[in-house]
Image 1 (cartoon, one colour):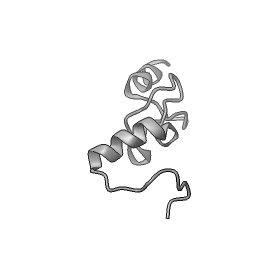
Image 2 (cartoon, one colour; image 1 turned 180 degrees about the vertical axis):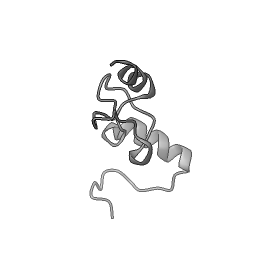
Image 3 (cartoon, helix red, strand yellow; image 1 turned 120 degrees about the horizontal axis):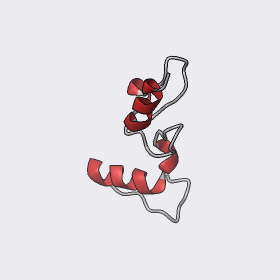
Image 4 (spheres, helix red, strand yellow; image 1 turned 90 degrees about the vertical axis):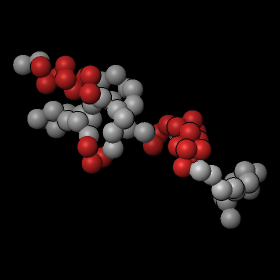
Length: 68
């Protein structure tokens, strides 16, 4: 039983589930520590600098890695 009875449960395809999560649960997406945009990655392939700063999206990680 749903803990929110006003929202009926129903079967969704993987695509529908992904869209729902993206629009209703933005906190589950990994956000870049620099620009606050989704990184497009998960815990297993997160991008961090050598001093454990991150996670970063590919663009910000490239800038951080190139900066001495």
